Length: 305
Image (cartoon, rainbow, N blue to C red; front, side, top):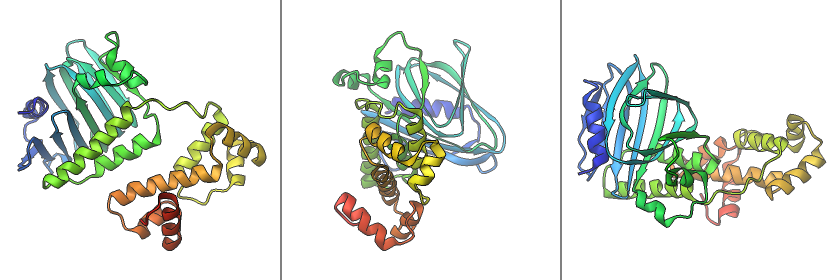
């Protein structure tokens, strides 16, 4: 049996008829769908032994409180992709309110907790719980690992999602359909392990300490589906074009055009993994011509989309 699934079932017992349990023939897979009288959404857990993955999506017609008592030692991440996470620890009387996007780090015996779900607020999240022994094999090279290894840290800590690769992969994992067979299960496990490895890998050096370059990077990573020019970028960040190009290359190691291309291709790859057709992917990342997109993608990755 799975201690994570058993704990989740205990929590759902206190919610009345909020959920409909959905039977799964797959080992250690637990799925619940919201009662449409109360809202829309689901929760599901996959326990792969070394890693337990949870996904949840909520939209409620009225506020809900969920009580749970977690008595086993817990170590893991909650990635809040949308909405708000509001928890009260009934033992310490400490309240936590986190707004997305955030990564919540958890360690220790969390005890009795109340989770407050807001009405009319779309919320989506992923949880990753894993065995503490895994950390013995990893160098304490980023803030996440240091949190888990330090006995003096609080039980819960919230941090910004550190980079777009983690955010993109978390969205990809979240959007995977519910597993129907063992091959689907392997796909979910592989995507989950890849996300965990991204979270635990050595932290990249901070390549954008200058606020003006941070602003430029933010524009490239959020407006990559639009026609972006260096002139437009320089006006937005407030420095001339030549200085922006030189400073951007010094800071990131890439030209502005190369950085924009990498961002578009990574997002395109994520969309293709979700099964979107090439024409739609091309349009989503700023290419009006699907054939030209396929040519650029093949040059970048070495294979056709």
